[in-house]
Image: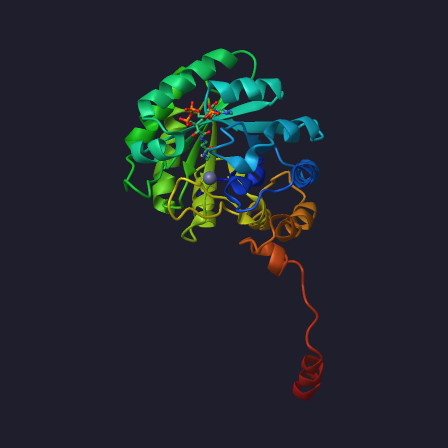
Length: 316
Ligand code: COA
Ligand code: ZN
């Protein structure tokens, strides 16, 4: 096992990955208030929204207004997801700190999500990267890197080859996404080792979903392999609208709780984070999967029932 890295950096994606799949539109006021509350928690980055087609992702059709109204906390990067050149122009106009481009590692998922073959996506994203070069850093999220719900297995070599092509275009970072929770810890260890060998100069982020209950195990495998950047979603919201069976991201508060218990520095105030996490069911209007907000921290102790005192005396 590796020694502890100095610091783990979290990118909160609830207002993008989470809200994009919610059945009911979340009011712009609620989105702005949530991002502002998250800005006080100690995140390195917040993926605020996406500049996608409002027909494709109607839940995030208020992206301009949200970006215009949030309070920008120094030290926090405000990132946005961008699918094409049109989205990039909108993101620049909105003064996003980072553009997060997206492409799938499966042809079928790319066609479903982005309406074009991977080769065309790459050409389109190359144009975006050229357009914003020297202005705004670019991250590329590689969806379905650990498997596709329609095609099945995705080879590690496929992910490495696409990551290489984006690295050669000068992107700042790559996020390797387990879009539908198909990864397992042994696979994550192999991925992480290969990525670090080939792309040591890039910001490498892992994006896990807890679809099959392996989310935190996968995160731990990545941390132990030396990865220091993770996406998480408050309450465990999230999922891709074009991935059958997709469900929530790893819950940010559960991940931070685990890492802090193990002695890692996440820079995040768990107390503040849990207070915000506990508002999530009210914001989205339903229960959310995150567990620590319900159970409390391992250090939040409960008083013993009264009869225990009587038993103590009886057995004294
Ligand atoms: N912002 C706003 N509008 C956009 C846009 C953008 N970034 N990109 C395209 N549009 C509009 C076009 O103007 C057009 O509008 P019209 O029908 O009123 O003329 C419409 O969307 C279709 O445009 P087209 O270029 O034909 O795109 P498309 O239908 O092939 O859709 C995407 C391609 C990628 C833009 C669209 O599927 C999309 O935004 N997908 C989002 C994927 C996503 O975020 N998934 C979840 C996260 S992984
Ligand atoms: Zn996701």
